[in-house]
Picture 1 (cartoon, rainbow, N blue to C red):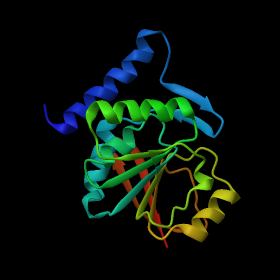
Picture 2: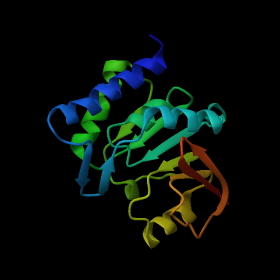
Picture 3: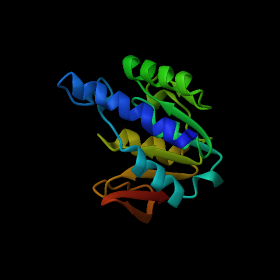
Length: 172
């Protein structure tokens, strides 16, 4: 089995573990709401973005680590997650799969994001504080899932659709 298939399989098993217990892979955390991304869609998005040309990728609110894990198949990838349990899950899966990526357990507002070319985020509560941080530190591109967010400090450059889901690319 190749590396991509192993990552997909591991996260499918993790998702199934919630369903077998009668639950769903979602969680309300102190920093926002976590829900899973679909691995195959994220992989296709990264192919369309030609993520291999990116030097440093950051997933804000990386949850169980699946987006960061997939990004690590293309480039240097880091995930930042405030929730200790989700952070520990991402480390466990990273170690089991022997992935070359990094995870940081802290609030994203405490992290300098200026060294990252691409920042990926599922927009939960985008607010003035988030906008200020982007305006001050972001040098590269921002990718948000869904068409419903408006980042005033950046220009919407591209909308990429994968299986009916929209991803919006912003830059200056």
